[in-house]
Length: 112
Image 1 (tube, rainbow, N blue to C red):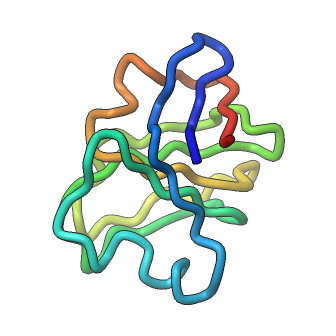
Image 2 (image 1 turned 180 degrees about the vertical axis):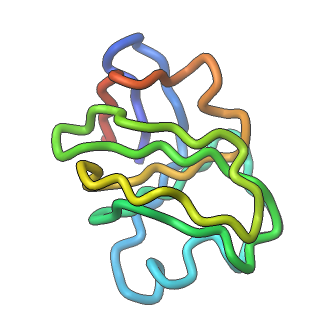
């Protein structure tokens, strides 16, 4: 899948995987040693995340039910917990630094 920013016309990540089952949701990016700048992980439903047991930092993009960006956590290091975003319905996890210049709060993201 592709994460596309409909607001500015930029491709955010060209290789996005959706965590569709319990195993994928529990493990997320934990087994990975790193992440390429073209990769992403889409979690839905989701309103908060953690980076416990992860080996690298990520950008976490919190989206509401209309796929509008409500918050971005840049370079979230391992062993951290995000705030709970009550209006978030999903999260797009990206390699740290990827969201800079590609996504801003209020942007509309499409996963296609």
